[in-house]
Length: 295
Ligand code: C5P
Image (cartoon, rainbow, N blue to C red; front, side):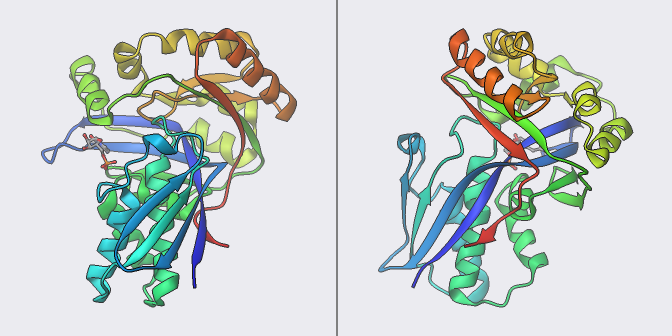
């Protein structure tokens, strides 16, 4: 018997970052939007805990206990007195590049899959708590849709989305370390104000207004990501030149996100990005997308 769960990638349409806290994390106003690029995580009872991964970027995925999917199953097992003897298989379609929460998606997917396999009876609230232990972005991978994340991003308030938004993601050649990007943010922003969600942006999401959303997207980590990965400036310019309504670094990068007016425009922007030679590949995705779903 196996259980398979489908989990989406995300883009941060607003990432407002405050000053570093005593615990090293940063308070955020993090507006998450789930996008239609998915990993599928399958769990099957096995002799011992094991992770495998298939997909174009599978070679870059750690298969040891540092994989959030393995840690999710261990945490759930520890809570419910089960030995985590399962084979976790990840069919990976979310680019492994940073900034799209692919690792977080696998953590949430494995948790929901194993919970169904074992029939623990855990409440959704408990599962979200375990997600928060795994990482700041993991609770959102479970709930999907759109949400405002506060605290270090793990306290979620669902947001209404009044229409579909079309995105292009440019996958960079190379990576960025999230802690290094936050450190660079601290260096560049010695007096960061309290992070606050933008009313204009929340209204644009609720109204499904792509033009207004394009004018309101903002990522406080962008300057830090560009400082550490300067060639992303060229990627952003290539997408803007191709007609994107907005171009921004996704999360801590180095993936860049481009909002398009419609599906046709998204395809043209993706083609232009690939032709520009400023990224490894480009992917088109719609939003919002559902959270972790048992198939
Ligand atoms: O929570 P997660 O493990 O995804 O965080 C990875 C790193 O990102 C943290 O160790 C920290 O350096 C940085 N971070 C932060 N503030 C947040 C979220 C992440 O400083 N709100």
